[in-house]
Image (cartoon, rainbow, N blue to C red; front, side, top):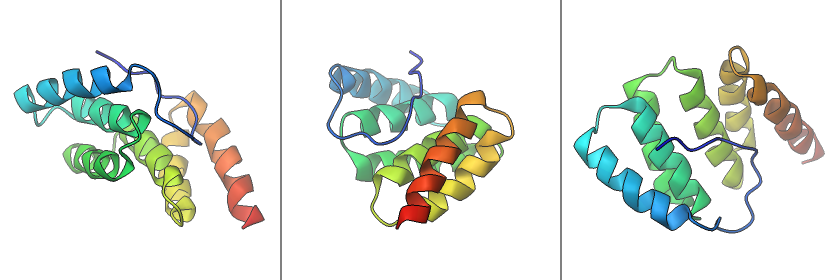
Length: 117
């Protein structure tokens, strides 16, 4: 299962996210060292509203492949959902923006929110 990563700013859990979490939790147990699976699991947790668990899983994905731009992008989206972590989110988005089309737009959006703080 691949979860399409979309913009930050989640306000409430997304319908169907709990089912994705369930399926990806099982996949992560089967393949605990597979970065895309762990990163998808992290994003599903985020969509389900479990930000703390999403952050831990996303850090695990970065531990598995710290150079992967998608892992940095997912981590940045999750960090943006945590209060007080936007500057750190920006750093990860800068890495992701070098390779991912959507990361540049997200970088601009989070940058504008940081400047408003």
